[in-house]
Image 1: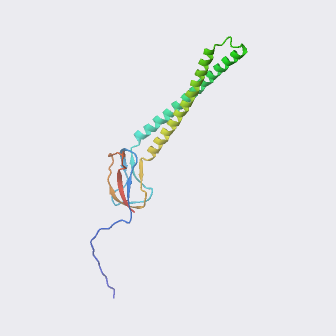
Image 2: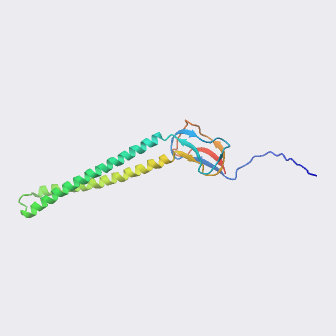
Image 3: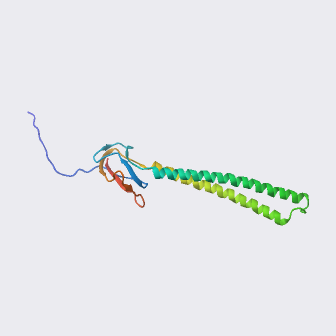
Amino acid sequence: GNMTVHVTATGVTEPINEVSVGIEVSGTVAEVLVEHNDLVEAGQVLARLDATMLSAKLAQSIASLNVARAALKEAEATLQQRESEYTRLLGLNESRDGALVSEQDLTSARASRDRAVALVESSEAQIAQAQAQVMLNRTELSRTEVFSPVRGVVLSRSVEPGQTVAASLQTPELFGIAE
C-alpha cells in the first residue's frame, strides 16, 4: 500500500545569492513600498526619497545655466562693439597716416577687444560648467527611487519612512534581497 513518511529537520536556509540594495543620494525616506519576506521583481520600486530638495537644486542649476547663457549673449555683443571700434580706429589710422588716431588709442582699443574675447570664452566655460551641474542634479534626482536589482525575497529592511539616509562615504544598505 501507500506509505507516507514525514521528515523533520532543523537548520538554516541560505540563499544562493544575496544582494544588498543601497542608495547613492542622501535625503529623507518618503515611502517604503515593501516589507520583510515580500516577493519582489527585478526593477520593482522598493522605496522613494523625498525629492523636494533635489528638485529645488535642479531648478537652481537650470536658472544658473540661463544666467550663463544671457551673460554669453552680453559678452558677444560687447565683443562685436569692441571689434567694430577697433576696426574703425585702424581704418582712420590707415587713411590719415595716423594723424587722427594716437598709438595709445589703438593699443587701448585692441586691449578692450582682447578683454571682450576673453569674456566670451569665460562665458562659454561658465555655460559648460552650468550644463554639467544640471546633468549632475538630474542624475541625483533620478536616483531618489530604490529599485530591486533581482527577482527574490526581501530578507531585511533597514529603513522606515521619515528616516534620513546619508550616502556620504559609503552607500547605506537599505534592503537585503535573496535571489
